[in-house]
Length: 569
Image 1 (cartoon, rainbow, N blue to C red):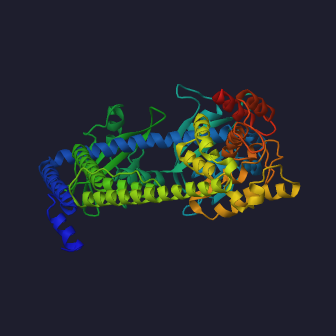
Image 2: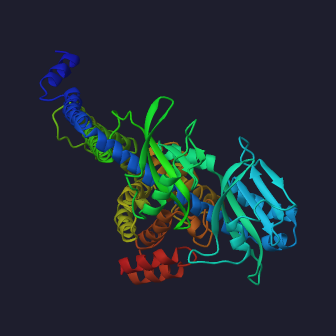
Image 3: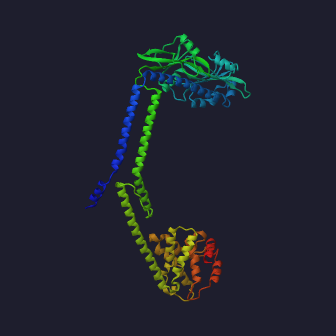
């Protein structure tokens, strides 16, 4: 049986494959969606049509009234920003339109105000800035000088006369001009000593206001004066209302609600509408007229606010359910794959002790088990190779011992002490493996030193010392191209460097010397002076300690020396 057929048989015997795992949850989700859709359709069909329409009309009326308040607050905000801007009062008082323009134009543009007017105390126009209809946001028409049309308006006279009531010293009104009918908020411009030096008006076209309300409420909006005349409307051909109806609306207005009885039916472009009326209030209680909010009576596809909330909640719940199922499904499917990816990355980084856990019996479980077997095989092969490498290194050391009888056993003696000090210093076990190899190979460079110098019984000449001191360079040349031995190089290459920089072969100083080489310098010297040599006997422990102390700060690292002394004592 080949591999392909073996794998196919394994997959066919699985109780539940990935395809079925993906399909089954979405089949359940489809059933839930069908049941939910049936519920929504039932609610839409059987909900009371009249109730839906009435609720929509009321909601549109409330929203329109609230939006008028928001618009008035926004205009008041801009008025205050302009009135209290530095230099504005002086420019108004001195009738300096250009200065006033420079001081206020940025605020006007940034807040997208349709019209701003400044008047002095005689009602003369100091400056007006009117946005050009259809122009860019920075395109304004400016005017200055002459008697203004606002002087006789009650809301302007109230400001000029310093009138203040419970709502403050700002007043609202509307005015019909050749440019259209505008809603204005007027307020005083005060000098530094809090005296009125002029009036500022912020205006907005009623046509723009009803258009904005239309977009936000989806209802037709009309604003009427006290005589029932149309001031602005979104109807293409609006009609006025009976003044007695306006008077009734104003007299029976309820501050907390919109009265359903204040309504009428009308037809525009062969479409039947029902129009609901509410008082057009400004500054909390001042009435300027009435607002009409109209909806078409072809509302069969409309829904009440309650139904819309139910639909929204149901849709939201279904959406959340889809997300939850999708996330869980994604997690269930991708978790073993992600574990395989993470494990593969660890293997790439050299960690061969990883193992992917399996909790299912599908194709991914087969893949995970195969991966674990592969890593185990690689780990065993690596261990065998490392054992072979280490055996080879030990063989090199034995060969060197055969050449140099004097240092025979030296490597075995320093190994244990090196590992003990390295662990006491907190060096990781992974690095200690390389320290061990570096210790084994510390004198491998002596392979390049002639026997007549290496085994000379007496002192070496200066010429012979030059050759002997080259053995770290020989070690570097031998090992630098062997990849797995590169981390072990610091000891063979740098163990004759000194803390004061007078060592060889490179004259490294202080912490420039690798830490493993600084440790080995102590251990190497200690073993040398406590072992028999052909030219002298081994020193006693007390003598050796004194010799070692003399080298602290010159030959040896002071901090590591303290730990070394503690260990050998």
